[in-house]
Length: 247
Ligand code: PXP
Image (cartoon, rainbow, N blue to C red):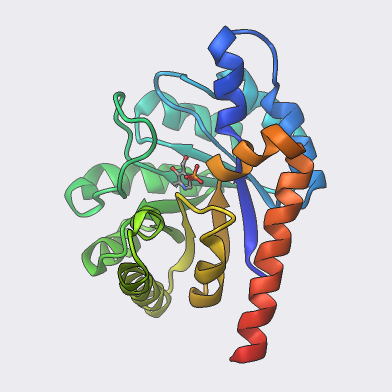
């Protein structure tokens, strides 16, 4: 079954609104794992707008499933990743003004820096995933810089205005997964996925992991994070069963 990575950044966003100690993303991670999260993801941003260094340290000590650290290629953050040794790093583009990650990494134009960063992380025993758009050139470049995984950006699919464009964008993602597989890359997907739109992705894409944050944390405000994660896991399970029984 597709694994679920739960991004808990926005638990920390709420804490940082008051710069206090609650709600604690470390507690949220434990409850998310109880709810069935296979992976815990946090994005240590250069401006520390939500996740703090202390969170990453404590999560490393307490997450025994899989810790996925989202990050830019900034030297300071690369140093923290090498010290912390999460099981996986997802490299993403990062702009200070953005509300969330906008678009995938441009691997083609940043090959030199990515070559260097991917090698240093891989040499430390960290699996490296590159968050990219489903473009052939970017996928090939991801392979060339030595990434083990790509995470295909599902944001455009999530924002599609009608069923027609949703289908077209899903075909593009599907094609991206095939290209990745043919090159020997492992494929994940994420961004903008919700309880409403995840089903079609599960039924259409053969990926290993889905990475979901905002929608799960939003639901957790009303039902608690353990239940919110359980509900997403159930959805992924039901759509996986439907896919395998129809195909
Ligand atoms: N994957 C990546 C690489 C991301 O940057 C994010 C957002 O932090 C997500 C997945 C999760 O996106 P969302 O919060 O829209 O579910």
